[in-house]
Length: 82
Image 1 (tube, one colour):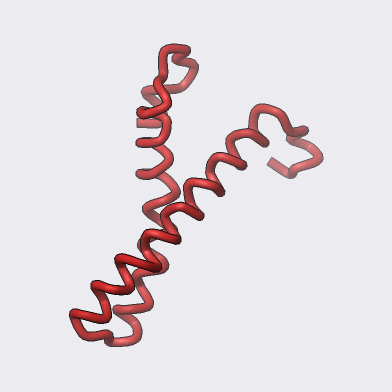
Image 2 (image 1 turned 180 degrees about the vertical axis):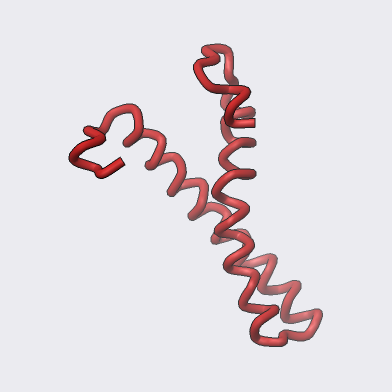
């Protein structure tokens, strides 16, 4: 999805957020949910963890990617090490 939107001035906010969710937010969300698996949580605990912590991590992932993308456009690559 990201490659389809590169240099496309008609990319909508919805498509951009879809890419962010699939690219970074889902990774953060999955990492947060992994605690239930590693901790051998029962079904109710795992569902609650997915609901609360997974949702929180998803939003942290979106925020992370938004900032990263702004730095890609506005930052100095040598200074940022990117």
